[in-house]
Length: 464
Image 1 (cartoon, helix red, strand yellow):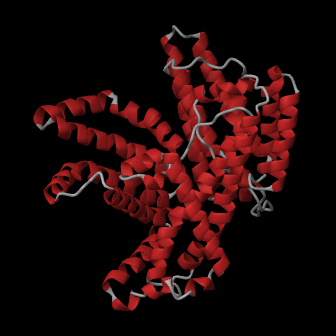
Image 2 (image 1 turned 90 degrees about the vertical axis):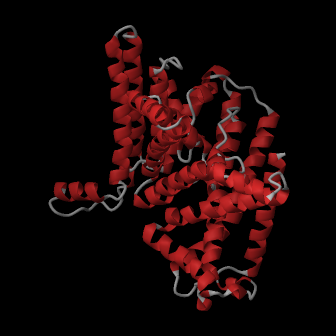
Image 3 (image 1 turned 45 degrees about the vertical axis):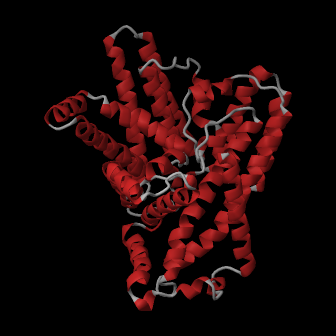
């Protein structure tokens, strides 16, 4: 069930009517029923077993540890759960390409595989709810929260339908209101509906049209060369943001209509002035999860604490902090890259941004001195615009690897750079001669321009 389909909208409307008619103490049960129905219609019955299995493992482990709280052995179930959940995620990525399971199925069927569709092997939304459950288990281990004793409520926390497929990745504290009753509130319905509509504008009206342009340029690279490559590089972040944040607007809007606030996942990332700030505004819940459960535990580990102490003693406090932080950030970005998928994500996300962020930290003092000597007005609009444009270009470059893979991404980026050095590739007139209309019509281009202007205006108002 696509969240942009008419069926989904009818499903939400019907769900809301029943939700506010039944007694409030039963509302969480109705949400659970809606979540199971939604997931079944979105993927397959088999994939629900992943949900049940992951939730059951988390529930059993936390209950065992709660029962033996004073026993030092109570740590074992928590660690075992974390390892098991992480292995499930890794298995998802391993079998995502079907290779391993195709071999198994062929062997089981005597050399032939009559099963054409085995999507259920990589269950829908598995990456999101696995991280969410992992965070829940670790929080219980750290005693930040109390374990949920009702297995059905824990399953609802895992399978809450608005965020099940695309996130955001919520903590247990953020979703405790799932189990509370909610009165009908017109403001929640109105504002939620408005946000859903805005999500449709971004995802269908804008991302859909921009995607046609980007796909054509990056597919037919012999036809669309030179400045066309710049068009693809600069438009792909718009497509990805409008698509992903549009989904988030729909998801958050639907949840708001049920009276449940989900955490924001985007905060005007293209207004960011540095790459570090960009990643604090983009896919916020994934970044927070990685910091809380990957970066901070690594930085607080005995090995890195000893390394930090050694480096500060033999070099300087600043050097020690920089090296230790870079080690922790390396593992954080590797986890994020592996979570997204294969090599293209490790290069386009992990290595690229790890290098960029570390270079930013290293060169920051030097840049500050240069700016001071040159007398730049760093509080002016023009300087802020330059910083945001620079950050956008850095992200757009890495996004090409994310979109196309290492080889094709490098090819498109090289094509774009040739326009700066090779006369034959310098064809800026394609931006003005109407040749882009061979990909999309002029009315579609006008719609894109209007939608982008709307998105900028909304972004500015949000910033203010």
